[in-house]
Image (tube, rainbow, N blue to C red):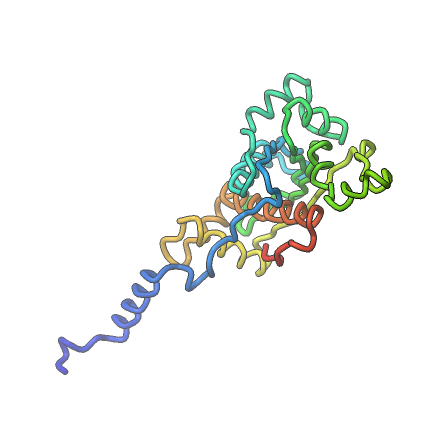
Length: 251
């Protein structure tokens, strides 16, 4: 083989890199984020209220995070989510600058006429690389719908002879039915791996390092954090409604 036909080690490396990139970035970051699934057999409508800012940072925006949560949750099966501006309009009509108590959450839930309302707080916010975002979210549900979910056909069959076997509607349960919280710090290797996996499924990767876009952009990082919290909230609902059918955790 003459000198013109021989490939240098540098050319070999460049060719190998090109092949790897052409085969997909999953070689670097895994198979992407898991899809979101709701635990409901029928279609439900939720809404997300702007989150309260308790992070101590003036840059944290609860409306933006609520919008990200809305966009993530509406991708879940059997779940529709109202736009955040609809929620803001209802809050304005009720003279609610933010949702601060279970009573206010219930009032907003009733006003919107939805099956579920997500409320929460921003607990930590650091926008510079590596970013950090802490979120705590809670789900309030329409008690009538929740009551129907809790019915067991065997209990209904026994109800004719034993009225006490039929579950009573929990009118006194005014608090959230499911809640999750987390502080997602990109300095944590586990969080970084999850971030890479999420980014690989969002068409943002042009090369093996471009997942860093999700680290230098707080808006993209908030999108990732909202996905994680949505996944965990839906899983918490699955645990509450049908624990035996809950899939293994991955987010």
